[in-house]
Each structure stands twice: as C-alpha cells, then as structure tokens.
Length: 189
Image (cartoon, rainbow, N blue to C red; front, side):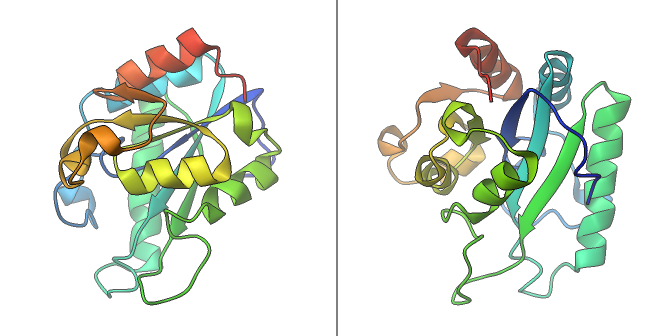
C-alpha cells in the first residue's frame, strides 16, 4: 500500500482492531464506524518520535464474507494512515489477510505469514521486534514468528476464555502503555 523503500532502524508490528481502532464486536468497514482506541493516536506518535517504523498486521475476513471490498479497505487504511500522520504518527504499511476459514492460507493470524512477509519486505530481525495485539490469536502469531509480544487487554481479550493463559511477554492497557514498554525494553528491531 505504501512505498516499501521507506526504512527505519527499528520496527513495531501492530494489530489494528483493538489496538489502533476500538474493538466494536463487529467489523469496522467504513470511516463512520471507525473509533480510535484509547491512547492509539498518542501511542502512534510516541513510537514515531522514537524512530519506530510502524507496520499494521490485520485479519480482515470481512472481505471474504462480502462485508468489505479491497477498495473499501484501502479507503479505511488511507483514513487511518492520514489521521495518524496528522497527529504525529507514521504507519509505514498495512498488511491484511482477506481470507476466512475454511480457506487455507498462510497469512491469517494465528499463522505468522503476514509478520514474516513484513520482516522480509523491510529486512528486520523478528527476535528483537515487538508485535502488539489484543487477542490470543495475535500473541500466537507473534510467538510463531519469533517476535516479542505485548497484549493490549481490552474487548478483544475478553473474548478469550482464559486471559491469564494468553502467552504474552508483556501486557498493557493501551498503545501508550505498550509504547512505554517498548522504550523501556530498548525494542531494537
């Protein structure tokens, strides 16, 4: 979606729903439905100010289900990127999986395909890069790809039956707290 020639010295991977936009319990398919998650714009700005290349990795099965189109998703992504930039954040690229089971693909989280593709495209070390998400599926994808993980505890985690069992290295309440963890850990990616 964006120019892949852009580079940073360190990267962070973010899930979209529940991390950047508020988890609604249904698909966010239009700008009218979009609601920024608490701390998202500030967290994106903090990460950008500290030199992180921000990459979004998101399942969007609403496309396979016919509730969204690739073009509609592109409009929503452009809105997210432009709004983040107007608040000091800079999202380098958005990777999405349009598939829905029983389709077989390597990109739908908890499979690590999108994360591995991003690391290949931007040439960064997964073992020193954080993936921030809000579900067990996100943490599993990060762990399978070999990233460090931060779980945003919110509506997405409430759907998971055993919150304590979600395999996350760190936990945060929002993207601002996740950014503080990244900075404290040195998060070189």
